[in-house]
Image 1 (cartoon, rainbow, N blue to C red):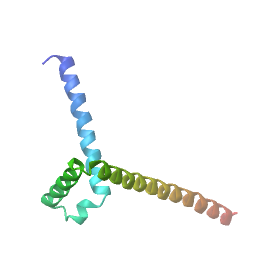
Image 2: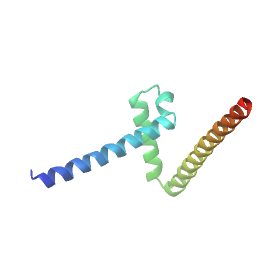
Image 3: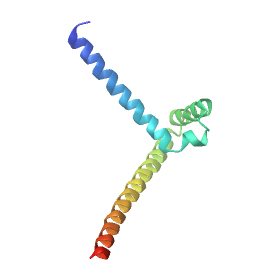
Image 4: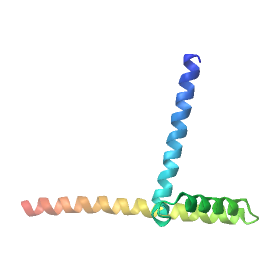
Length: 100
């Protein structure tokens, strides 16, 4: 295999690996690992159910619903992170004020 072919293969493999890790993070973030007690059959069955819904006559509705829920969850998470950061700043300010 030529050097450039090998490099392209390595880059593609790393990109795919990163994508799969991100998907696994979403599975974890959704709480599915804990809910399914890390049972791969349960997780796979749940994914098959999602895929079936997204292939059904109601695919557009299901996809829109999933997208709304995901967007809302990401927004809530971002707001919680921002609030935690604001609280850190307030705590640091209070600590500084108390020291003076």
